[in-house]
Length: 91
Image (cartoon, rainbow, N blue to C red; front, side):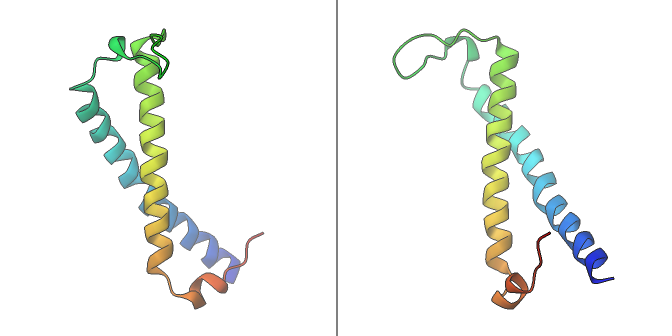
């Protein structure tokens, strides 16, 4: 029974982090690409990025989502007590 409660809590916590970060990644992408044209992007060495705009949008969205999710996970971990963290079992 404890394993079911633990799984349910993990899923709830994961969705509490992933869904808002998904929405904010979309907002951040709209803000960034309202200013930046993906066709005008260059690598650090000066060579132009030769990917389609859709690829640039997709990669940027995934990167934004990962970074925002990482911040949400760190926030979630910082709000828990040491007892809550240490009582978890990972299998």
